[in-house]
Each structure stands twice: as structure tokens, then as C-alpha cells.
Length: 364
Image (cartoon, rainbow, N blue to C red; front, side, top):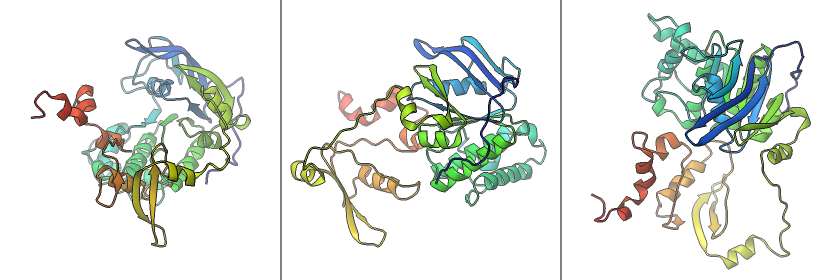
């Protein structure tokens, strides 16, 4: 369970220069203005949260800070440098939301690719393996990942642990950027990660945490920046703001509806046809079922690996014991491997499920 840290919170001092200084940063991609004048500071020894709705500019800002993208105007200064070197700003590492691992390589080979400056060129296999195993053990005890495992054979959660661990293997680490790091992690892995992040803060590192999980942000961070439409609209002390405050600052609306008298699940069941019926079993083995009626939204809660993906897979494959409409769409959790064909362009990916109806003479 996430709790507020007992360590001393970061306190800003006027005589301490920020490690990260962004001033009026603008970045456009064609007609899209991804960043529209971002200004913020991040200090060493601080966990700095960034929140905002999809498309607010969070990931673009992180790519700028990591040195992957250059801004069109404004300035970015990290550790006194105003422009990244060939491999980005020195001491800045990032764990990416969608992952940046080479799937066809092993865990230790991926570590070597991103840490060649700290691993000897000759006989690098053993040092890279030791670094990979050591950091995984340090951050995620009991992880079960071996350095010689091929990344493509790992589960989504295991790959995310490798992605995060690899980002921290740098002898000159000063700023660690975590972009949605916990989306595929179990509850215990999340707690282990944030324990490690707090240790980094205590040792003087700066950490930027991007997440949609507002409760985690408030539990871990010292300050929180809210982004909207490519700009930072407000910055808050994490101890003086609530989840609802952040949600409203992001442009959300909070509505409380009172159910009509007598309304409930029974009335829905009696008035609407069944859209989904999945036979299941309880923890004790007793038969049960997941039922969704037309017009309902059903959530599957639980930590990673507790069967949610198996339920969705049964629906998608239309197993014989499952009742589901033939008009079915599925967005898998592992979108990079199971949701798209990376070597195809956008048009082909968008139309692949409709090809039989788009061709004049069917699909050949």
C-alpha cells in the first residue's frame, strides 16, 4: 500500500540553483503545437511530478529534457548546459512509457547498449550481466528476471522492470525521468520502485515522475506541475493539494450524481439484453460469471497478473463458453507487440481489420 514517505520533504532554497531550468519552451510538429511556452525548475534532491490529460505535452517535454528532441524556441538548461551532447544531456536517463528495449536481445545486452561508457568494451558480457542482475535485485527484489533472458520472452511487467532498471545504470546519473513507470507493474513492484526513488532523492538525485495516477503522484512527489494544452498551468506543493484539485487544474469536471430511487443492478438486468457473459470461478472454485448488459461499462480490477488479460483474451478469441457480440474491438495492454504491426504504416494498421470490406473484390 502506498503511503506518504516519512523522509524529510524537499524544501526550496533561493540560493540553490535548479538542476533543470526550462524557460518559454516551444515545440511544434507540423501544425501541432506540442509545447507552448513551458517554464519550470527542478532541483536536485527533489521528486517532481508532472500530470495532465493525454496530449497535454508531458511526453514531449520529457523527450526534450532527455535530449531526444530540440525545442523551436525558448531555452533548456540542465546542469549548466544549454544543449545536449550526441547522446543527450550528461547524467540524464529516462525510462520510456512504451519501452525502448531491443526485443531480440537479452536483458544484459540491452544494458550494455545503453551503458557502454561504464562497462568495458572487452569481455563485457559478465560485467553487463552483473550490473543488470544487481540493479534489478536492488529495485525489484524477487523479480524473477535473468540477465540472459531474451526481452521478447518477458511479460510486459518484467520488461517494464528491465526498462526502469536499465535507465538507472549510469555512473553520472543526476536526473532520472520516469514516464508512466507503473502502468504494467503489480502493487508490490510499485512500492519497491518508489522506495528506490526515495533513496535516489535522499542521495541528491532529481527525479521527474510522469503519471496519470494522481494518488501515486501525491504520495511520492514533493511538487507537482499540471500541464494542459502544451503549457504548465500550475505548480503545487504535493502536501497542499488534493487529487480533485489536480483533476480540476487539468481541465476535468467533477460531477456527483444521485441514483434514481429504486435504480440498481437488478433493474438494469431486467431492462437490457446481455452483451457479455464470461463463465468464471471464485477463489474457492465455486462457479460464477462476469456479466455486462448493453449500455454498461464494466471494470476489471486487480494487480497485474491476476487474470484480467486472460478474461479479455477469452472474449477476443470468442471461446465457446463465452457470450459476446460479434462486433468486438480490443486494445491490448502490450500495444507495441500485440496491438500494431510496427513495420506497417499508419493507414495499413488502421484498416487491417476492415480489409475484407474495403476491397472491391474482397481481400487477396
